[in-house]
Image (cartoon, rainbow, N blue to C red; front, side):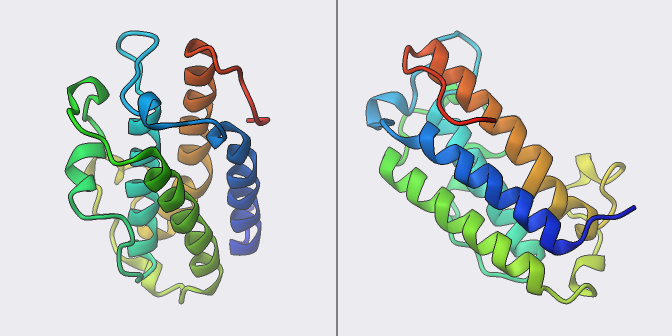
Length: 165
């Protein structure tokens, strides 16, 4: 059974709503903080979610929202501890909200032929050969995974866990 675009979008909106409580109280001092050495920082997690959500939007035919230079900073395989300067936490939170709200909107309206293109992210191509498989993953599993990491980061940073991811 395959899920409808509306169902996938609804799941993504639920995750975004759950994330709101985790975004509250984050400030620039938290961006590069690694309370547990080797784990990703809050700034990296949000930046990564911004560029991957934007990637999903681009697969749906939209122009990017996140600054292009964020891609090299927050792409898969980067290390949050190596980043010298993060965007402002307010900017990361604003872009996160903007990107995922638009992704939810565009995904239910996209022409399915647009999604039949090969997945350009080669490491994930065996599991998600086309954009039709990759975009739902970015909107659900990938988003939920990294929001779970943000919840763990909050606990380790002494901010408590908020939300219900």
